[in-house]
Image 1 (cartoon, helix red, strand yellow):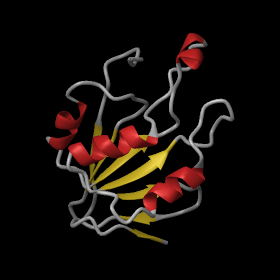
Image 2: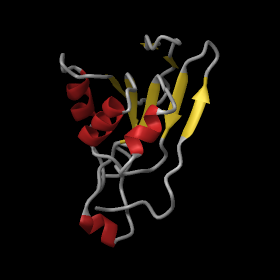
Image 3: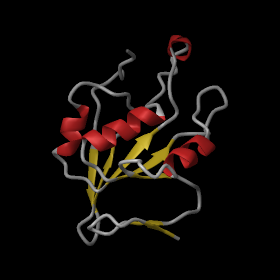
Image 4: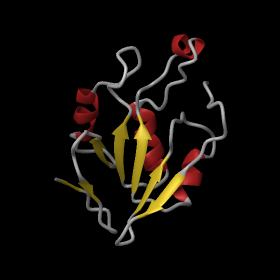
Length: 133
């Protein structure tokens, strides 16, 4: 398992209207992560989903969540919505946007999932009814 170089840090933002957002920063799954996030009571998770590999780690490219790990973490933390980012940044280390979109369209997905996009404004209400404009 590849571990972050420094202790993981979570940022919790409380938005006008009372909605809360948790931002994990660059991270991989680690023991206690979902429980720590659960305690924050977030409505939306911002998770990096560009994956990782031993070959890239050997080149000092640690990577982040795989999409399934990010979804599982959000689900275990009781966070109902996730905005996936960090994909498509580098050809050598990415998750395809089409994979995120396909997963987001799955009717049994336990969370609301969106791929982040440049130039898109996201709205989140306190009861977690995300909208896009």
